[in-house]
Structures are given as C-alpha cells and as structure tokens.
Length: 253
Ligand SMILES: Nc1ncnc2c1ncn2[C@@H]1O[C@H](COP(=O)(O)OP(=O)(O)OP(=O)(O)O)[C@@H](O)[C@H]1O
Image (tube, rainbow, N blue to C red; front, side):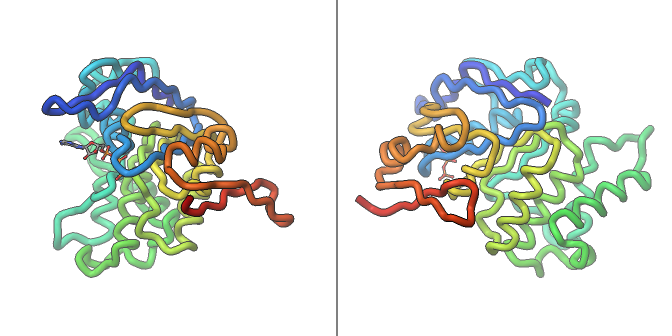
C-alpha cells in the first residue's frame, strides 16, 4: 500500500515540530527514518498513522487522504508500534497479539480460525510461540517489544509503522526482526538509531530539526558527509572482504 506525505507540517502550542515534509513510500518498500533525538521521527510516524493531524499538508494512503477514511478503515490498513508502547496488565502474551485482529472483528464477523492463524504466524515470526500463555507482567522488555511487533503483524496491515522496534532487543533478535521486516511484502516505515541497520533498508529518510534533509538510496542518503553534518560526529565507510556492502564507522570529532 502506497503512503504519501504531502508538505506535512505540525506544530503544538506554537512550537513547530515538523516543517514541510514530503515523501512517498511505494507498496512493499521499507523506508528507514533516521535523525538525532528530537528531530521529529515519532511525530512523523504519528501523522502517518493518523494519530495526529497535520497543521498543514496531508497524508494519502493508497491515494486517499487519511482525513477521509474512518478510524476503522485506517486501523485495518495501518499498524503502528510506538516507542513507549505498553499494554494493560493481567493479560497473556497471546491476548496482546490477538488485539491486532480487533479492526477486522464485528458482530457480523466474529473471531474465526483465520484470526487464530494470523496470531500463530505472528508469534512464530517474532520467535515467541513458547511464550503465548505467559502473563504480560512477567515478560522482559525485549519479549514485550517482540509481542508488540507480533500484534502489528497479526493485524495484516498494508502499512507498518515501527518506531525504534529494535531498541530493547538483543543482537540476534535485532537482526532477525529487521530481516523479517525487510522481507515482508508490506510497506514499512521504520525509525532506527542504528545507521548501519538503516543502510540495509530499501531507502533512507533523514530528519533534522523537523525537516527532511536527505531521502534516497541508503548509501547516498547516509553518506559520511551527511552523517557528519547531521549528527556532529566523524564517519567513514569500512569495507570488509566478507561483506558485499560497506558499513559506517563513527567517532567523535
Ligand atoms: N506534545 C509535545 N509538546 C511539546 N513538544 C513536543 C511534544 N511532543 C514532542 N515534542 C518535541 O518535538 C520534538 C520532536 O519529537 P519526536 O518525539 O518526534 O522526536 P524523535 O526524532 O522521535 O526523537 P527520539 O530520537 O529522541 O525518539 C522534540 O523536541 C520533542 O521534545
């Protein structure tokens, strides 16, 4: 599902958080969103998800303005995992993932075996099948994060918005979740702090001070000059004989 941000600006109490951001993510594409702390990544995610309304500009989902879709229509098409996502206590891991099916259920369309299958598959994708009956409060931060991702996957959205999905994960699960995201045939926007992980996505968008300062193929958008300018550090390409693609090395200037 294609998503388009058209000249998006957002301000709150006179403070401009986003200014004139325009970008398009094509169906099935994975776009990494990077930028320093406070650059507007989460704000942009919330606007793309329809959780906040832009002060100016518009978001178009599959060519339709988000403002013209009902909440249910948006929920059926878009899944978001926010940074500080949390869930009510006294609920099992599986129930959290089942919440992803909510936008598809109604009096005429009660829970079915198809819903159970989507939940099973999502749990398997994040390697959490063995935790299904565990109570939420007993789970670690990384386990909860993987379940939030499973909840979003169980929703079977056309657009997946993930705000720092790997920040609590060990290196195995960081790589496996990113691999899974990249291989999904779902349009995905993923906010990441690890620039080398961003390099593995289809394209990269760089935000700074609420503005889009670079957008393009990963090695172009995240070239050492841009990284130095935006993050205030020195960066250079490292080429490893065993890796097909170069990666970035950083140090303080
Ligand atoms: N409700 C609000 N009122 C005032 N300022 C806000 C509000 N929400 C966010 N901000 C500010 O807007 C800016 C952008 O915040 P945002 O959370 O989008 O940044 P981010 O790029 O996701 O940052 P991080 O990498 O730290 O997660 C920050 O300076 C933040 O303090």
